[in-house]
Image (cartoon, rainbow, N blue to C red; front, side, top):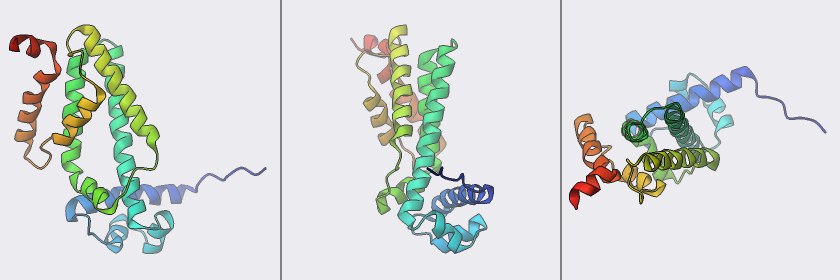
Length: 191
């Protein structure tokens, strides 16, 4: 039985350049940016782009998949810091802030994904992110800082309602306003 060959180094480089260029071009010009423009920005021939991504939907799905992987990496890093002794509520709040900021800069990519129907092909990164966020929540609940009814779905709901189309000051204010809803202290003060 023959084993699949690893991709050539130049193919790996080209794929990475295409993904970076696609993210930048879609963010700068919206979901209608052409594949020719993306190829030019990546410094590759259009044929090279199509060899890696036969359709624009495939390309956008890969960009979204990369974004989800970065979110998962961030969530796992936050959890590692909590495991090493950092305060869980601080890490959860900082994670929320970072994802909202990333979403603000990548919002055109997300809009393109919705427009083109692109869905990340690999759920493993979504699962990694969900597991790490769930562990962050449990750590905060164990510390007595995060309200017992907070779930991963609540965090995803917060992400979906974040003012990513607003300036950084508005996004910071949003985080200041929603954070107390996660905590036990804010709920006790309301009683």
